[in-house]
Image (tube, rainbow, N blue to C red; front, side, top):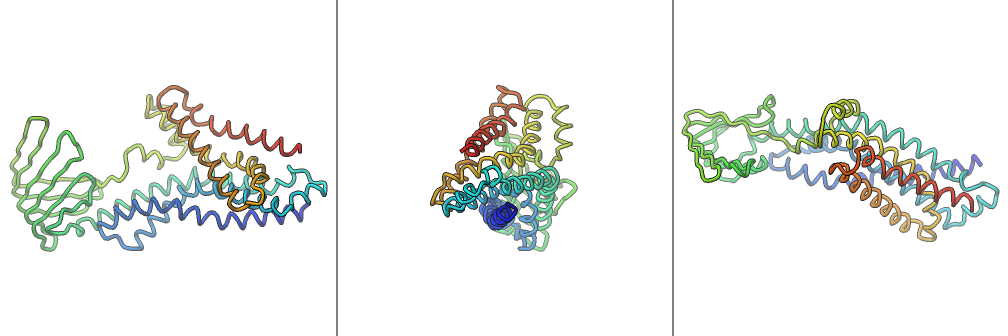
Length: 355
């Protein structure tokens, strides 16, 4: 029995070691595209890009660990089933639940690692990403403003300079549409731009110009000799900063924050817990699904794994939307998909073990 368990566990570990980097790379493509659009405009170095990508790994691991675990179990047990090895093991007197022990062992390890990533590494990684990207933009954005070009280094803001000499900009034009109902147009004879970390953005020191502010049918014009303008370099909406909070901070804020913001904090806290615990459902469900992959151990396992994760994600998204709208309590919205999958997984596993 121990020999069989070691053989299965070794196959599981090898499959998972291959699956995690592949899945990480696939999921990382979207983030790389987003970061490259933001950072390429300011000429970020490969070292800065690599460090930021490294900080995104904890967030990705929270998804890739259960996904890689599911695929490795489906592949390993599906291959054993296709080669009739499971039939031989059962004929030797080992019940199905004992043959699934290596999957249970690896699943418990994935839960422990997932909880550590969710509680500790993910908040720290998201804070590091925001800090690193902001620091890179603050450092390089002033030098990235090119003369004679409409620069889009800040979202919803266009900066144009007729000429540039060292750190001096002449003939400045700034169009700010961060507030669509009140666009602002600024003309300045000259100016300087520097990073302002304490203000969270770029500081424009403008001289001899005019500010046009349009609000409805009204137009406000302000002439100035000296004008300081701060343009923040925020990369995400404020709600995204929930990912930077630790579970303790989320719990404290959820208890004291009423209404929709409080619901968002409860759902974020439940998501941090339920994603690692989804491995409980995987360790029960995957060995059973592997029995149905038949001769298609590789292709069948991949298709089944994709279907399981898609179904869980759809159920989680739907239940969270119900909680956001106030139709169900946040606990129901956050926990019901996991509980449902655990019940289904247990029933299927119990049925397979009785065969």
